[in-house]
Length: 612
Image (cartoon, rainbow, N blue to C red; front, side):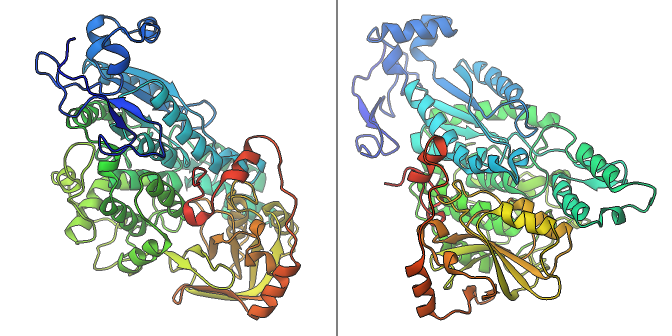
């Protein structure tokens, strides 16, 4: 025996000796376990496979995989390096190389590092087509995948490297479940795009809005050169919008979640705003290895970091920077995985007290690369701590507090218009508004930055899937002479299935300059969406929610000040309509989406699949 411990304690995310019956019980070395030479035992999970000869087959497989000697086999912690890598998506195509760099940095610590990939979905490619139904589901599969490999392979720690929207919360949910020392490394934001024909900066959202203008015959007006055809403009936009690796550049979903994860404390300082193509992103690898060492030596686990206070911080940064509506859904799911109580009312409460200060796309002018140049998210964090809006005492993966991490970071320069002073915000309260009413008794989420106005009333036009609406938009059949509320339903977690984003519809509205239109749905919106939009309506239509009872020409009112969304229909009439309502046939009955539709919870619970 080359150690001073024999006891095997249960471990599933709770304190040693107190097994959480919701998870598989794993043996774990005690926190104070040491080797005979007094060195701490860092491989608290894998040691029960490797320190003796109880599992010779396992050791044989590990030797064959590259463990060089008996000393490392017995004593070195095994760290899984999970890259959400695949070719064919700029958000993820560089993550294999980033993972290799991180793996090498971890190996220099004398640790064993195992690199593997998990799946993902490109929202940009799936947007507006049937592929989008697989997007939200991929979050659950990523979480399941990383949890599975970590637990089955007895990894002692995890480094997860996400790049695209659903990657981000999927990785956090995984490490919150297995609760072993972990660090999240964001793949980074893309550089700004440029249109050669228009001679101006663009990004991925320009593509969708240009399509709307093209369909309505107004794209030619985007160029001062009247010899340029609309097709040439659109082609130039397609070629220049995404110049290389990295996630979509505005405060869209990936960047919103990266910011949240850094503020929660699961990323090293600056990770959320460092561009993918910057040399600094590769230099993060050393910081990540240092953070993993700190977490292993101090036994800092994800649930030590993911606390009520850190989630409060996450809500504040979301409101201050204008984060995506998807932030609500994903933060609820991450909190549930970490066993931290969180609900829609928490978002509303924080929104009321947090000024909106970021001039970032989609509602503003700039992208995250611009924010990086003036100090990035750490400089914003420093501002919000100084303003009393963030709790700087929360623990992070560096072993330091959030406040300590940013103490030496530069303050935001005065001569810039990307981040406004707290004393002169764009909007005195947050942009995300939680609505209730006879359309959404369980709640709904609106993104109201202020430029759309705070109230909208119009007559309903109902569609039972996004493609029906897009067809009507393309045909020019949406009136411009009166206010219209477009209702897209049966697109919720179960009804979609998959709660697909409605970016194609919302961007077409912007491109077509339909300012007399609001859009409501039980589905989701891309982080790139803007306009008068309401999503995440609960209950969804597929389970008989009141949104299913709306009829064409019903008058719908949306009020962001009173937080009410309602149809001007008597309660008794709504109830009668719902009594006559018949559930539609399930859109799928076999395969992965059928399983998802059967298991998934409502948006109120984050649309998770392990809520039993």
